[in-house]
Length: 288
Figure 1 (cartoon, one colour):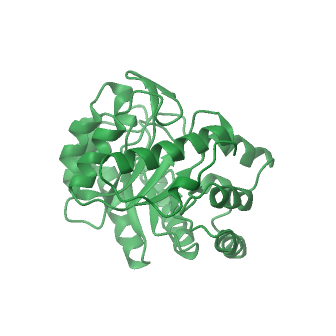
Figure 2 (figure 1 turned 45 degrees about the vertical axis):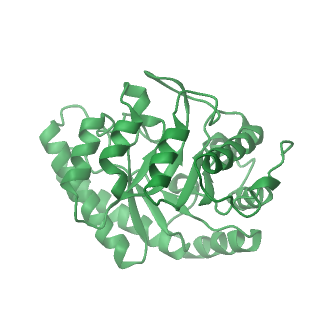
């Protein structure tokens, strides 16, 4: 297993300029991580000079940019808007390739008022499949997440309900699209993540290890302190041969202390379910 992080708790720092992405790469390295995830909301994905700079900063810090997180919105009601969105997502995939990121996170789109279930599923399936093909051609794996809400969105994800997510996974069977399985998002609508995972585990290429306070409400907490059944989820994946990237999605608002606690938890749970310890996993300090 390789461990990365989507540092949602630091997003406000990135926006305010208090911290930069190169700062984040150094923090990730100091915390003993293998990778550091980035969101397209925090860099200019059309600027090749900036992309090269970010890739070099990550390499100098000793971490890999493991995943580029996008907010693909393939359920836009207007056809031309969906075409523009597809072009935008393709450009973001190109940015991921230039950053040498192995993965790009995709989402179905927002629950726009007036969009029917049938139309939303059809549009999302088309957009996701086309983006996955484009990513594959650039050596990047496109991951579709069981998602809740993008930080730049007005509406929740169209496929947040588990039945819609599972239908989209089924529709895209046989495509280049893989799954990014989030350990907490299903709980927000009282869906059981273990039951959802059982249906998609053969497609899971990476994991978002996240946590929320309790079922029925999306209130993020430090991973390991909430309701998400991390041990049972990782055991299912480990027993099935999974040994890929686990990204701790830390959104509790507890800053570096929350990040460090989440990483220690991820390593401990992975080992508890029979996973091989990461090199340096025991070096994460509590005073980060």
